[in-house]
Amino acid sequence: MFSLQSISSQIHEWLYGHLPPAFALLSEFFIVGMLMIGLFAFLGLVLVFMERKVSAYMQIRLGPNRVGPKGIFQTLADTLKLIFKEGLRPKNSDKFLFNFAPYLVMMVAMLLMAPIPFARNVQIWDVNIGVLYISAISSISVIGILMAGWSSNNKYSLLGAMRSGAQIVSYELSAGLAILSIVILTGSLRISDIVASQQTGWWIFKGHIPALISFVIFIIAVTAETNRAPFDLAEAESELTAGFHTEYSGMQFALFFLAEYVNIFIVTAIGATLFLGGWMPFHIGGWESFNHIMDYIPSSLWFFGKTFFLIFVIMWFRWTFPRLRIDQLLNLEWKYLLPIGLFNLLLMTIIAILGWHF
Image (cartoon, rainbow, N blue to C red; front, side):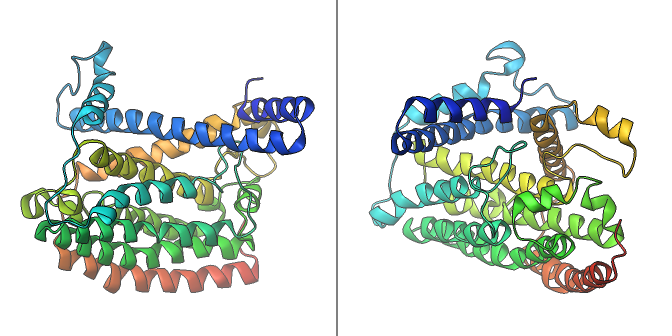
């Protein structure tokens, strides 16, 4: 049966069967790097097209419908336009930081892909501190945003970057508490262990109400962390023109634009892995026949199905809720989400100690 696991195993066996171990390892690194770049490009095209079609459906419009059948090549045409446009730089900007910022944001996104399992036994790096690694690396992206805002020598860019920094640092606390609740239930920081612990049911169902509260807090927090509406204060068009990337054009703007959608994919993939079982099929306790039928569905389909469902939810937020003011944004975090998250973490600890989860 077709699966990512079988393909990766065949490639691994062929490389080590025909090449010396050192060359086989380098070949695997090269293949993984090329696949990551290809996945990024594919995600950018698919998610932008999906965003346009979802927004069109919610506003009773057609959306892209000219370039290609049903407009499927519109995002490709826009990408080619950005690639061939000249990249301009403000006169008094910091040249090195201005040029380096979009690449730093993209590098962070690529590093975050490493511990995420896309299917059964398909994982770039199964590190034993996977959750800590994700929390640490994701914090670096704010440096790229602040770098872009400061180096542009533009007041709108600087204000947008400062807003983004305050927003990301604030909401990382709530996202971290939500993730920590699942770590307490599992007893491990390794992503593969968290997925394996959901073999008899996903944590969103097994963890009772505290797990559901953690999931809701996580979705709200990562929506804010990725600067998505209604939390898109960093690039509020009516106030800051385009926020921290106001002065960017051409391929550099395309990198920021791509990084936004890749980050959406990454945070939803993390949410799907921690709360919805990742690639693990939907199993119910001792229902052997039902569980056996669910196992026929390839694990990669389970993973991408859950991830794209959460992406749809985040896109749904954008076209449903109005943008918050900056004071409302920070009040929501510090007055509501953070205290609720702390109390919920205490409840989850009690549940884990007493063994009250399913």
